[in-house]
Length: 278
Image (tube, rainbow, N blue to C red; front, top):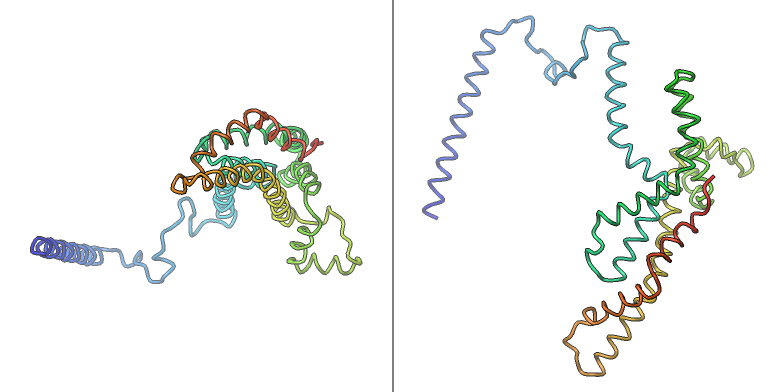
């Protein structure tokens, strides 16, 4: 305690000196500041956005805002693309498989994510090619504008998501949109898929993918759970109650998984569950 007290006093002294210096510099700045440039309102005291001239034209300000919005979208683009593809289903199933094997961090996260990404690109290749052919390439050739390119590029993704989205999940998010829900009620409970916004399809598709992935994960857990129960029962009957069953069951799990060629079966079933992408 005797050592801590001088440290506290020293820190208080340093903080007091910094406050004095800050107050002095502020006073000096105020003394020599130009009255015409002195901030008068709260908005004037806020930091300015680089490149935005307060006295500039609305067009210049709009261009800077568009650039900032584009940078924000690019930072979120990987997450958006992941939710619009089969990556969610693949990564969840592979994670369930690793937990069922009880191998902790084997395979490593880099291997799991890399395999999921490669499978996603292999399965979604027709969708990517159509989006590139119909939307990106004409836009780069200056044949269409930005809005038309975005609409054309999103069509194959929308078709893929609608093919793998349950109607129950889609109705849930359609009901959250008042205008869209009113259109559905006016049409007798029916709606053209082209009228459903993409932002409504994405969360519904994600819910459907997670439901399928969790069901597949449950089926993967069953055989390994049986092995754990058998090993635990044998250890209890032998009086080895203090020996963790997991230590004994892991070799049997790995042996079973290798004998049945588990990775081939799991990856093949994942690809078949998604089906051919057109």
